[in-house]
Amino acid sequence: MAKQTRKQRSANKRKEIRKRQRMKRSALPALLRQNPDLLEALNYRHPLVKCLINENWHDTKLASAMIIREAPTGLVLCCFLVDLLGPGLKDVWGNYGLTDADIEKLESKSEARDNPLIICNLSLATTIIHGGIAWAKKWGFKLPREYKIWLRLTEPVSPAEIDLDLFGKDGKPVVILHEDDLDILEDAAFDPRVLRDPIDIGSDGPSRQTLSRLGDIKAALIRFSRSPNLADEFQAAFEERFGKNGETDSEDAWITFQDWFVLENKLEDDGTVAQRFVEEHKHRMSDDVRELVLGWGDVLEGLFEVKGKTEDGYAMKCLINEKDYTVYATTPEESFDLALGDCVHARIVPAKGFHVFSGMLSRFESDGSQEFRAWMYDTAVKLQTRVPRLAFKDNEEKLNKSLEITRDHHRDFVGFFDSDEVVGTGREIQEKYRAFMDYLVFEKEDPETGLPRSQAFEKKTGESYRHPNFTFPKDLLRASDVGMLSDPVGGVEMLIDYQGFVGIFQDPETSLEREKSEDLVLGYLHSDSISDVAFRKVAQRFPDNFSQVMGYYLGTNKISADHIDGLMHEFKPWTFEKLPTTVAILDSEMARLSRMAKEKEAEQESRPVFGKLKSVFKKGAR
Image (cartoon, rainbow, N blue to C red; front, side):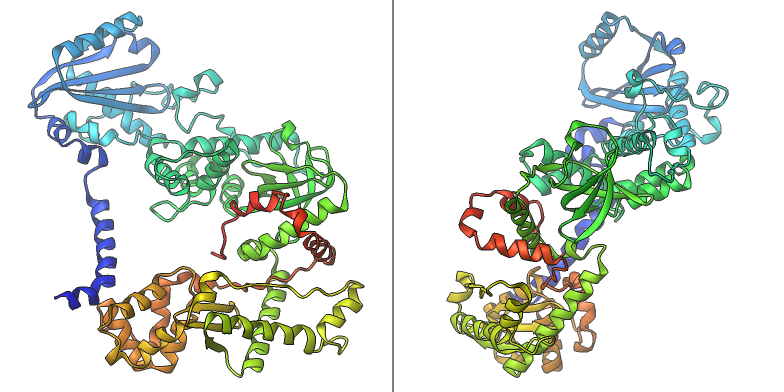
């Protein structure tokens, strides 16, 4: 039985995840799961105690309709706040296990606020509540997240019974545009022209009025992201980023997180907040505004250098993907008063032929020295290697050049070792890799000059070539079994316990029963830092054994070496968008100054720029 459990552990884990996902979709709302007594209390069949409504509802067109019933656990109350002029049902709340004294206290508080509650008949309360829901749906206003839960306390009403004559003015909602009234509406609290009218861009670029309007659209989008319907997903994303009890360490981090959540975070339906915003406002949104908001999902985050200034914008170079952009601020704040030569960590999004800042901007003020530029350029070079996905974004030339370098490096690797894989202890692999690098630098001829690459470099730049001194990580050096694999796209990959991994597929009969073998295979399979290369190698060498081993550990007989793509799609989908780990630097000035900064390594240690940014730019290409 124990062997069967080990054999199916990974497969059962996946089945359990799928089961939980199905249960989550079909389960009761969290509020009812957490409060079982509330589930029992919310039933329209319980005896009606009374209905209440604010006395001035007809004059103010804002009704608080309350239904109170007698449940086994005490009185249960539900209040529906309905705006009869604007969005209809805009809020709902309730409580259970109450006493007569609790209701009397509620009535006393309302009277003390000069908004007394009076008794009304159930018919009026039902008309206002269900009418408010129908009105909101008709005009596309967002309904409160948990309204369906509390609606269980009201009697069912057929659509034919709903009367909308009480709502709106001349059959249409009245949208309140005054700033003091923003809390009356949910995400509809903005001038409808913000979304409806075309976006006018003149030949000289966007006007200040147009930029302000883009800011208004972004503000509406941010407001929409904080609606009750998205509260759970917002909290889940926040906890994933900062921890369950975590807090943001700065306002910059909070603003950046919020911008990421709105534009890039995938919701449960696999869309983004921006996409959902467009869908819910499509009836009032022009085509170019829709295109604009959807385009904001193409965020470019990077380290930028200010190259020029206009009245409202900047000519900037992204030092990570080495592309030039014209970027505008949607608000004329002092924080955007950048000088030539300054560098900024920023997020920018496209907007009809130009870009605008999105989220927080961190400024690194230039002192005008070449040393400052060298430090910033070297930081950018490090970030390019750390996050190649950003380095290649929007720059096909850089990607193609990097692919070319990586393919050449792979061919050299195979030519030097007579194989695309080398095995040994950690220290042996380090020495072999150093020998390979020495060959590339001091022996292989440069195709343009015919000289060894070190001499060709010195002739081209006038600088002395400095061979990089590197040391493998300690865990790699201490390992007795390391594989060094070369891939024409992903580059060189180092794997601990590689020969042990291959041995399982080579002789499964003596390996499958070992728990260490299972941990090794499944560890490789589930790791996000180990690519598909090792699996493709053993599938090619031992196709029958590959099916046997993977089928045994995953609890299925449907795995075949001929269909390894399906397995990799399930466990390593990112490998199908693999990027080269060697990043070509196209700007010779950036390369030169980066080398200059590296020559002052001791001084760099007191410069916190890279240390500050490396935690922002997550490591890896995915």
